[in-house]
Image (cartoon, rainbow, N blue to C red; front, side, top):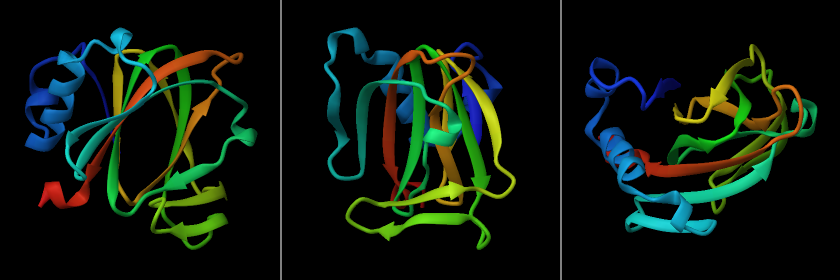
Length: 157
């Protein structure tokens, strides 16, 4: 997992892989206020953005997820949430085994899960080894607007 902010230009962003820099460039050049919720292709089948709004919930009400084919580059446009993350481990409690068509497995309990206070302007990069639980409330339910750029792991090779 990589946690960063677009507020801090320089070494933090300069040291990222070129495909992650491409995701940042997309975020910087896109007027999300003009976009409806939905999916937008960046690189056909290999990189796309999913723009969404949702209300944060108690972490006990949220399922953790894991992907194998795509990296999640999550950028919080507005609002605040807690995002839980832990590593893939056999002791994690699975709710739904991996489904290739959805590129997703779901979990209830994640061993060693830690939470990041995810604020607007920040980004989090989640790799296939990162089981993550997005959308958890900080103090009270809040509506957030987020873009998740799905990046095929093939683009990192």
